[in-house]
Image (cartoon, rainbow, N blue to C red; front, side, top):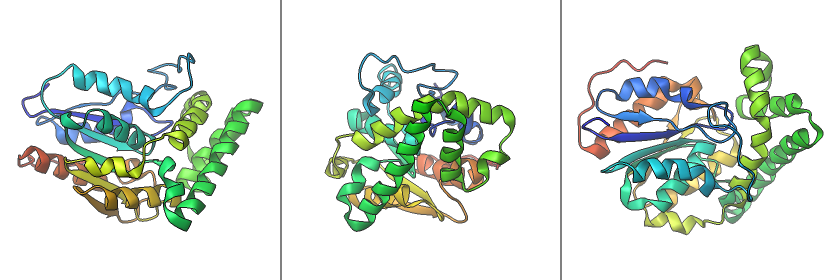
Length: 268
């Protein structure tokens, strides 16, 4: 680990550690970024299946990393990774130097957030059902297309390279576990009001309702949080608008650590 500290960055569903390569370059040499991969990726392998899957199971890898090092740790999460990051922060609040969430998929909060939240919950539950149906019937490719086009926009699946489509199809059986963990997590919104470390909540200008409502609710509930919107971005902003997103993240981490970030060119 570098002298400045450790950053743990958690990727979205269907992606991998490579999602954060530009951010790792932007943070170096002041910070060491680790990007543990979630169950279902080629690198991490499948979920063990010994009990019902929950966010706590996914968070365990990051918690082990935190417990194995000294000092405070900065945590970042995008989408599903944001849901996992919230679980990590909840379990190790005294070890968190800062938390950054880009449209965390905290779907378990939605039904408690008024009419807008209930409508958003209904919308994402429909996506979850369609994805699970594809797994049950064995039509992984169609379910992956529905999943990708929901989060990225119509036609996104067909625009992907064949190797990326193949990787997403291999990952698809994990998707229902992610959705179920995000919909069934029992943590109430009030639990996050105890966070005392700096929190940056980011969302895209064109965020879909489920993650937009959750992001705004978390930013309102956490006393130390601030909300920023990335112009022109959607849910996949950390990939499609990496330069803008990474500038926000680098500044937030540097401020929390009390350092002046070195001059860097952040790749798009």
